[in-house]
Image 1: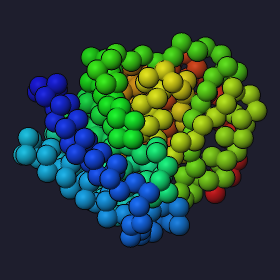
Image 2: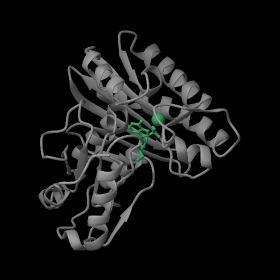
Image 3: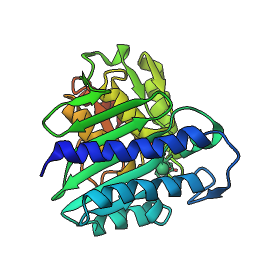
Length: 272
Ligand code: 2AM
Ligand code: CA
């Protein structure tokens, strides 16, 4: 399969969705609550996913879609959708990663598009329409931002590192807060921009040294996981098992900090 072509098609569809994000960000829109009061969706999320998939399907008529807006809300439905997504050619799409930011007019929202071929993530595209930054990667062929090669950072010391994380929408809020608090004491700083895909693109670009978060979905993570690895970093779940489409609790770093990060994530705190 021509992965360069697949990457180009994904980029083209991400730009189409990005135009809609730029047009509607921060505007009054009808907003619906999904699995919890923290989990929201607008009509623009749905329209963007449709526009993306139309372009992807035109180019690859036999491909399947694992897209946030086609799956019922909540972790159980998301895990089931991952189990059932067994096409040879599968697009994993989050049309707006950072919907809360989009609604509130905060500029960290991205389009995340990954391609899985025979159960392996091979292409990752993350587009930040507000800064017009197109991050993209092909497994084994490097990662790029607006055409420039990216590499993860060289930071070796957790104390000097800049990490990112986020607060989940349902369970795991307590654990996330405890983890962020713990790192807050002994790293340079912690950021929470509100888009997991943006965090992963920034790890790949060396802007962040690491990222961890609990209870995310495949469409938040797949493109970024391909990208961090292609940029020389390491991605796993929070107990160190290899990343896969079913991973929900993620750790992604420049590689050098990975074991230190995993050690400190190993907290015995309540989930909720
Ligand atoms: P979203 O905006 O596409 O929903 C912020 O910490 C991250 O959590 C974002 O990437 C956000 O993606 C994601 N997120 C929001 N609601 C979620 C949910 N119900 N389950 C998992 N992740 C979610
Ligand atoms: Ca989304």
